[in-house]
Length: 463
Picture (cartoon, rainbow, N blue to C red):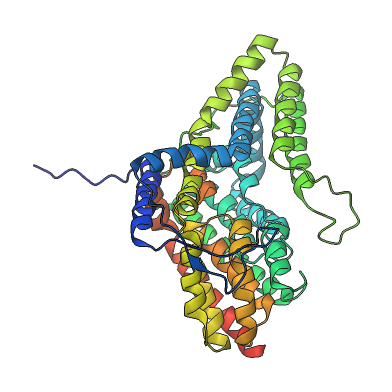
């Protein structure tokens, strides 16, 4: 009798197991805390032990819900995007548009990979495009499935394209900007090294995805999930008329995404003379809500039909919203168990007395586990940079290099850690299991890991 094959648990189970592991750690790791200034920044040298507060099973269950509350803005955004896409899909404009694009490309679909990855990479390096990518997966995965690739290619174009840009953030105000402020350096310091990183990392990611896509196109059996893997498919064998009304719907559809991209870019922080809207998830949710209503009216749907279709679309992405909320529960448990500062303190102690190259390499290595536990780049920067940047000065390492080590590690880990809500949400949308993703992406992560060490070591040696 054949033994049953091991099946990777779902994203929900993986995250709950991580919650249990973190709760168990609160029984083993001493509780401690730094003193904080009025703006919530920890003060170096003020760490002290506090009364322990180990987290039990009840706390694990509550943490999942508290994480959802803390991430309610992005969760609602995901649901509204689902409703918007549901209405657009009902019009048939997506299927017709994708079929039209595939016919126009005429076998040159591979060109989409570098073009789109460079665009997402520019978004990642300039304004930290990451959570916003969630809106693109339901749109682009069908395009690559229709072109004969698998869901992994569609996910990779967005996730690895933007991710490579985030790793080498140049003027990203949400990671580099916050970290630079706490390190006492300008956003422009160290930008040449980060620009060079962006070219190398983005090029490596494009090469990696293109090579995999070519193998899958030539031999579908080499796909890690199987061609057509994923629930989003498009039939291109039959002619789907791209009528004037559908073209108008696609124009509105495209306009909504362009407005979203423009509205979140902090032009003022980047020194550009363009109006900064400063929109975030509440405003973006309203944008997609209005977009869904406009598309429904353009397609002459009735009020009841628009409402039911929108709600149905929201339901399609409910699982993704839950994954994002549960993943936030890990940080909730660490904070409630008073172990976040202890982990940071251990890192502070390990870095004392190191030389420039050893220091910057150790900072990078320290941020790898820290990012697993605290996936938020802005939150991690706020907690850690005020502690580590002053230590760097004693080691002869500038604050700009500490910032580069932080953002490189943070961006790299979020390509593979199950605590990264965007990653788990993207895999859920593409119906790709976590173990299949790891099997596919680990080599690229290893390449970029080694390249990061090389760039940081050279930067420290030249400093």
